[in-house]
Image (tube, rainbow, N blue to C red):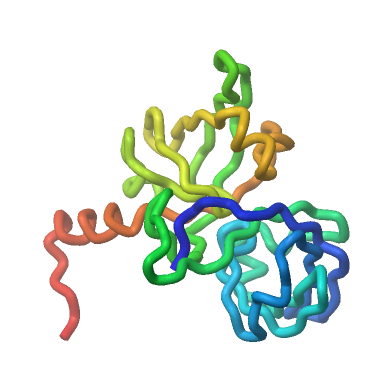
Length: 199
């Protein structure tokens, strides 16, 4: 479980594998405090640390995950938003994030909006119904507030601090981002559909 508050921006140091992939990601974290087997959200995808050294960790990613997230496009020097898993008793500053990517959204537009950056995204059709104005959404691991919604398109504002400490400062139209819809929105939509949970 995560909060969507990015703690570090890592860099992909190497990519290996055939079908599945192993990524080595360089970090600023104190890796002495990160255990083998720990979960780290990497651009919003919950991955398991399988090896580490003093300033990097390695993760194995299945072909399935590569095919349905942006991770399949990672190459050496790709920058990655990182968040360590939430500990019981810590402040929940964003919203509850599972690290399960629901789909890939595309940046349709980027423009200045005062001191902020205004982004417009297009969500996959099957995710769009879970995105609501003033609701929460997770994009590349970052918890963000939705400003407006128009069918599958939605807008968010990125404040200067977020642009500086995440990869959002470099995002341009045409870029793709991992999307996780809000957990509560998913369950509300299921209740409204009238579908009975299996027993």
